[in-house]
Image (cartoon, rainbow, N blue to C red; front, side, top):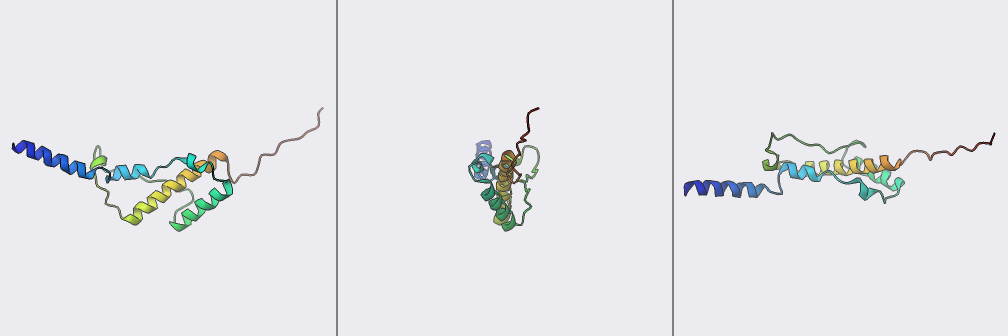
Length: 119
């Protein structure tokens, strides 16, 4: 009977961490760049620069991940401040924008087609 209570208490404690673990929230910061492919290049560059300036991040920001220990990531509660979580979420958005910018080669001059005379 006592063993069952220990197991039940452990399960309830673990269940309380679901959705609020640091590993789960940090994984959510990684975003797909495909959502930005429909945004025109000049608007995307301006949006990225504005977001970087707002959160005082570099234009090549990437999401960061902490190392809570082997196997403990899903069980480590997220103790970061709200402001820190917002900054890391913004760095994930900037990274996704940068991947879209690089893939579409935004900001680079258009490729010149070489016209030559035959012969």
